[in-house]
Length: 143
Ligand SMILES: CC(C)(COP(=O)(O)OP(=O)(O)OC[C@H]1O[C@@H](n2cnc3c(N)ncnc32)[C@H](O)[C@@H]1OP(=O)(O)O)[C@@H](O)C(=O)NCCC(=O)NCCS
Image: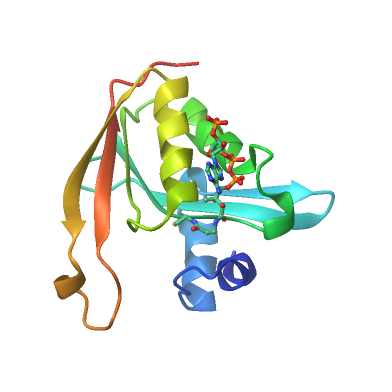
């Protein structure tokens, strides 16, 4: 996950943070393999105060595996396996068309409603990080 995050240009957490997630949050994370090679990952968790929500923190697919449904498949697999999850949350930068299309596709496939709020403002970050508008998909049905 750390290697994919780095290669995808995502915010890079420490390598130890990904190991902690792999150990303690594996039910809400996924790694996609092409043969033996990891080509995608989803880093997610259920916020303790909103246990029926799944927050997708990061999703990344290696450039050579994009456009083949890998990201959507990982997120659908999470939703299929987490019966208690009713709402999907994520934040996506305004400029990230691929990620916005991904979540719109998840909402459409499950007949859900996708709504946006301000999320994390650029002024909330201590560095030059752009704002992260927050999306919520409600009313999802099983596929
Ligand atoms: C965003 C990302 C994870 C999508 O992965 P992917 O495996 O290529 O996505 P999928 O093939 O599952 O596509 C899912 C949907 O998004 C659409 N989509 C994916 N990439 C797109 C793009 N560049 N432009 C427009 N639509 C796109 C697909 O058409 C599909 O929609 P559909 O079901 O209506 O056909 C990938 O582009 C990536 O890793 N980007 C860099 C990292 C990043 O920005 N991650 C998100 C922020 S945390």
